[in-house]
Length: 113
Length: 115
Image (cartoon, rainbow over all chains, first blue to last red; front, side, top):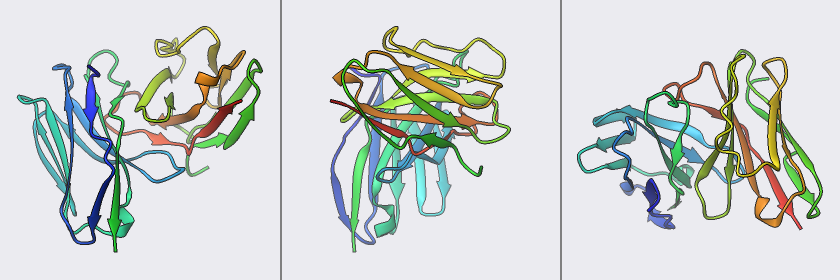
C-alpha cells in the first residue's frame, strides 16, 4: 500500500459544478497537508495548505483534513474551465525531514464549458 | 529571475549516455529540491539542499544519480549511463527556507526521454 492514495480520475464536470477531490493516507505522522495544481507541461503550484485537522477556505476552494480517518479533501465551488488541471495532494510529517513531501498520483480534472 | 528556471525543457538521449539537468532557483531561496514525476506515478523526492548543510540524498534511486549545488544557487542533477526507466519529468523546486509550510515554487521541469 502506498503512503498516499489518490484516485487518478479522469474527472469531467460541467462548468459551475461542485468538485470534490480526495486522498487517503496511511502514515499517522503526517501533520502538514497541501493541495497543488498542475497545468499541462507546467510545474505544480501550491493551492491550499492546512496544518493538522480542520477546514480552510480560500475563495472557491475549501480544504478539509480528517486525521482520525486519514482522509483529506479539496472542494471547488462554481468550477470554471480554467480549473481544468491535475490536482495533487501532498503531505509531510513535520519532523526532522519536514522539508520532504509525499505526493499522491494526482487527479486529472476537466471542467467543460 | 521571477521563478525557478530549468534547462533543458526537453531532452532525448540514447540509453547508456550521461545527461545533466540544470536548475536555477529563485534568488534568495536557501532550500532547493529535486523531484521526479514518472508517467502514472506521483512526484518522488530525490534530493534536498539547504544552505551549507549536507544534502539529503535519500531519494536518489541509484548511484547513477548525483546532484550538486554550487555557491548555494544553481543545481545540476546528473544521471550517468541512462536507462529507459529513467524517462520522466524531473522537477526542481526552491523555497525561502527549508520546510514545507511556505510551499515550494516548482520549475516547469525537464522532460527526459531515454531511447
